[in-house]
Length: 113
Image (cartoon, rainbow, N blue to C red):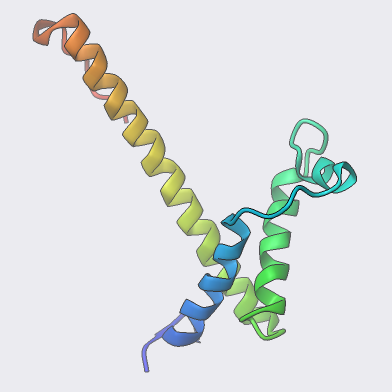
């Protein structure tokens, strides 16, 4: 069976499915809890968010295996980073298309990276 970072592919898929639950819609939490995840009120908010993803994976398909859960959290983090960069690139591309349409083809600007 194929392994990724020491995890069997089936286990990795199950762990990622559990981690995807962190991106779903849950009922609103009490403000004492949401304050932990608010970057304006807590400088460690992003860390707390990823700690909660780890806990969600650990208690679910991570099957209380710390290594498997850490690997799943890391993969979820990487997926989130790639998706965020892709969405910013897409927004830049859409802006460029609108700007070019408004200015006309003779005012092409250089590509941002």
